[in-house]
Amino acid sequence: MFEIAHVNGKLLKKADAVIQIHDLGLLRGFAVFDFFRAVKGRPFMVADHAKRFVNSARLLGINHSYTESEIIKASIELLNQSGLQEAGIRLLLTGGYSEDGFKQGDPNFIGMIEKLSPFVESNFENGVKLMAHHHLRELAEIKTTNYITAVQLQPKRLRENAYDILYYYDNKILEVTRSNFFIIKGNTLITPKENILKGITRKKVLELCKSEFEIEERDVLLSELSEADEAFLTGTTKKVMPVVQVDEIVIKNGKRGEKTLKIQKLFSDFEKSF
Amino acid sequence: MFEIAHVNGKLLKKADAVIQIHDLGLLRGFAVFDFFRAVKGRPFMVADHAKRFVNSARLLGINHSYTESEIIKASIELLNQSGLQEAGIRLLLTGGYSEDGFKQGDPNFIGMIEKLSPFVESNFENGVKLMAHHHLRELAEIKTTNYITAVQLQPKRLRENAYDILYYYDNKILEVTRSNFFIIKGNTLITPKENILKGITRKKVLELCKSEFEIEERDVLLSELSEADEAFLTGTTKKVMPVVQVDEIVIKNGKRGEKTLKIQKLFSDFEKSF
Image (cartoon, each protein chain N blue to C red):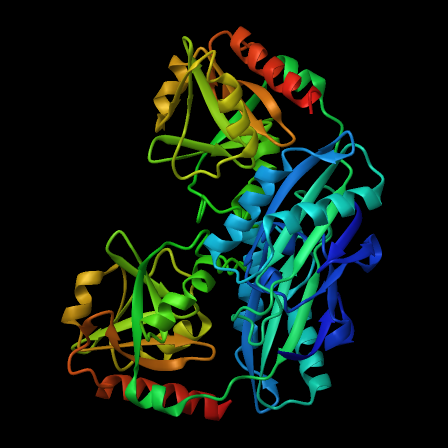
């Protein structure tokens, strides 16, 4: 999976990259992480990711002294060591080695450089189908490592031939398992604001679109899916990906819309300029 | 924390007991566990724990071929190797080494023998105070490793001088972070039935009490706390522990009740007879 890693600053090859089994990330799922891409050998939007990573750790209550600039520096060093131009960079900060299986220890800081799966161009062109599932992520605004529901649902997702899972709760659309969700009505871009993990690609798309679209960050009702002209999701490896169906609801004509194409272009131009 | 461990059947000393960092238990919190005591050098109520462990793995969707008898055998072997008479036995089954950071691999089976903290007799005699918190555990009926909310709340628990945290949701009492909750009204033992992890000690206490008490397994409203004559919690390391206060609500006279004492005696006799 990964090519090279560090654990607490020590550079390690895959087989040597281990943690002891009484780490609180393993024993109690108590850890935060972040994931971003390397583009042209440099970490893409790394300042935003480092900020979110440090913030997630603070909100969860992991006591640590890493600064954003140390996080960025460690990521760049690890990426340089890997020699990869295009890659995924995964960072974790765990609750550390626990004395009693519950109390926090000194946090363990882990970084790994991963080869990315090839992008499937047809998904970006034709759009994808999502499967809806009633779920509100625990501590949704913190990027914890808790994906038990998402991993558990994979067999069902495959049976339903869905690309990913769209969470909703109390009739409100929230987010996709590892990405954010947008609908377009007329010239208005609408995306959930609360009870979600705010993505870095989401933030960039809102920024790139604000001069060309009306923006509404607000509760999005499930019933609005059938009123939407277009829909898409955003994420580190999803970039801007059209959504053409959710369960049995086909968005408009079931094809990628013109406005989604325009937003894909805006994001792609931004990435090229990086 | 632990004395001796095995990873996939291989006996290891503490320093050597490691897993690679792309285990899905660490990366995605995708793992189940169980925890039980050794009493007089033998695993206590191990058949129930092994059954729950295998069942948790099945419900979460971890593909594995371990049988209950293999789980019991591995636990006994590990305990014998430790040479300890009284100890904690922790078992984990994780989603395994993931190719892409999300898909399951072959599960990793981990066992460890831990020295237990000394039992604090005054808690069993005087009872403890709990702090209430609005929370429903994700996949509550599966013993996953997800304790992020419980670990996150520890500083608040300490500030409030509470022994542990009582979860409630929509005005219904559910469970304590790692134990089950009971109230007594008259001669009736009342305990939540749904949206909880059903403890092995809970099961044994219900069994031991059924000839001497009326039993109600049902929704328990928060408002019933102030109507209760007594309250207690049950768990592997808590055994039967009186609860005398929840936030500002003092249960009856704030002292351990006679019926709780009787149930403690029933459980203690059962343990002595083991």
